[in-house]
Length: 421
Image 1: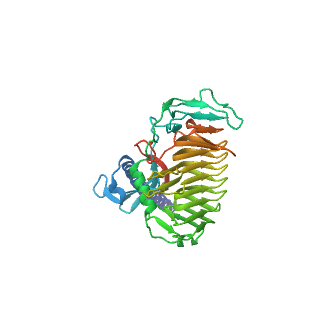
Image 2 (image 1 turned 180 degrees about the vertical axis):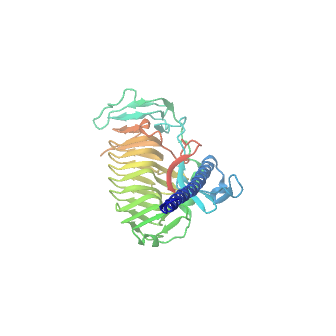
Image 3 (image 1 turned 135 degrees about the horizontal axis):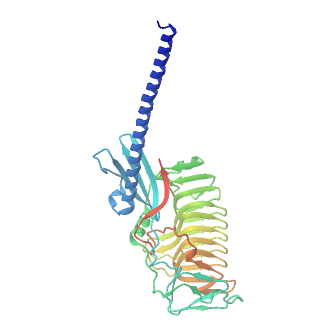
């Protein structure tokens, strides 16, 4: 005869077995749910990568407006692609979605350097020699006038650099610079001349980040001389002005576009931006522009202009990116890029006119110019470099250029990841 306590033991064992079985069922359900979630996430990631590769591989203008289509399985795997010009670079936006699950990425992309066209120096042949003095170093291939390169004695300084003068291959340059890309110039001209709406209400807060998944946000000062200060601006933002625009050191800019007839960046500024002006850009002393930045003069009109287009980089300033000047009409007064004492440029300088490199300047990358200029207290010297370093080998092998410049490869690569989810 069984004891009464045996019933309790059976009940307890049954409860334990029930709990274990329930736990197994819940675990199986949870595992299945997580597996499905991971599977869907992986599919979305693959679709997202496919969308990115589609934008990088092609030049289809249909993506200028957002385009949605299915990749593989009817409407189950869909992507939305959008590509648009962002200054001298391009921005792509990709969304991958399956029903209500969505992943997205925005990124800027640019061109690798074409090694066959790359050079430390390209100096237009104006039938006169190229002269070096002091502690000047040119490392990399150089396109120089047929008259050649020579040593010079200037400001009581003899040439003290490498005996080869150019540490690399020397080629004969042409009478004109290799041309900038016409399609990209047209985009910049359109951007400069665009009469976009916008107001300054965006600047009433002290920090604004605007997504590239949204329409571009325009801040338009019109004819009011404005000063950007005590504000952080990042992302899909364009600042416009019809007169001089001043950027104080207290303004923190990250990747935005700025367009005005004249732009002044005050001493001590640190950030990244693309600056486009019709007349002048002045970057004062001790500024830092992080890569990928740009400062460019774009004069698209056909009328003769008497004022000199000018980009001035102050002493002890560091600039990572591209400096360039472009005039559609050949004026008697050539555009000027002036790089101050002890300033450093990591990237490319393209001067359609004159390039002035002052004492102890350094360019890690490439210089294309029609004419060099060096000035002291009493004299101007043309096609002289004194105490200057131009080193194409010092530029990062991961550096990407703009399709605007003549050394760009047709291939596209990711420049920056801007947003992701």
